[in-house]
Length: 469
Ligand SMILES: Nc1ncnc2c1ncn2[C@@H]1O[C@H](COP(=O)(O)OP(=O)(O)OP(=O)(O)O)[C@@H](O)[C@H]1O
Ligand SMILES: [Mg+2]
Image (cartoon, rainbow, N blue to C red; front, side, top):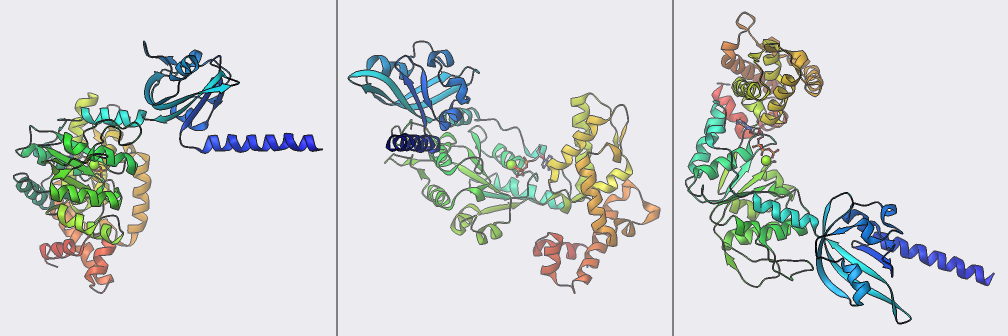
């Protein structure tokens, strides 16, 4: 009775140990004195991209390959009997993946002889790749103002603002839905500025966890934390040039405060450093929601907004400048004609009509993808027809049509002049009728109507003036 209790206790304790091993955020790998793996926890399987059963009970050197002259830290601990702390190791798993870890390795003694060794590893593969990757990004701007397609008043106005902003070094905030061209504008501004021969570096703030992004932006000093190396952050790398911070509203508020400080003082301090380094970087921040909403939702600090938004550029969504659709389409068809060696000449009139009704929540990017997808399934037809359009577009369009049933575009288009040449007038007529219709439905309440139409108050009022409503 007693004995079985002891066994159960042992089993139970064992299970707890196993569970703990699998929950901790460091890799743990233990070998016996022959180098055969006896413990290999879950985190280690993730770090090394290995299945547990490919490693357990196998000799370490049969599973992993170490670079020339670099012995495994585990094997060294077995042979030399000495513990090592914070040793960086780069090696390969048997699938050929390179792994970089920072290890603490401890030999295990049993009755005065070495009976095995344990390694506790932190994964730095991701951080290393990021740092190397970012260093490569220097000077890779490909867009200039000439790449921006559009003749609508709305786009011409913002291009003008952006061109003026390119002459100064003020910080810029670019506001626009996904696919409206924030990257395009950021790069064009850099290109047109006197910083063009200095680096343009871009970082998406939503792509990384907070602890990584802080080091990435401001840099780290060797020894600041385990595995930290002397790394110049993106501010230092972009010195003299421009730093595009994408999705600034996903940066946590503490980091936004640090960013504000850097922008105000024009200095940065690497993590773990006491020294302030002066920097001369033009920050171009991008945000995909209205900054006032972002502040209200605590996605954006008000003080940072005031500092960044000295120049604010609002990129109009495609649905607010539908008159640019034909020109964009023409350019994309030309691009894919060259790329795919095709001879597509244009859109069937039904397709154009449907493009003008569609909401384009993915904006210019979505339009380009629709053209690319259509041209992918065309054989030797010259015109893109509705049936060539991708499934997702057609289903969304059909839903849209149902929604619009009561205010169908057809009722606003003058039937005799159903031609592409009159597009601008057609659109204005449609816009005017539609706005009047919705305004009337809402007792001419501007705020309510603007909200329903997905426009700002200012934008709606601008349109009403323009269309003489
Ligand atoms: N006015 C335009 N003229 C030509 N191409 C455009 C225009 N606007 C956007 N594009 C194209 O659309 C795609 C998306 O643009 P971009 O990457 O600049 O958008 P974004 O606003 O940064 O989007 P996200 O918020 O998703 O990052 C790119 O391929 C870009 O070249
Ligand atoms: Mg972008």
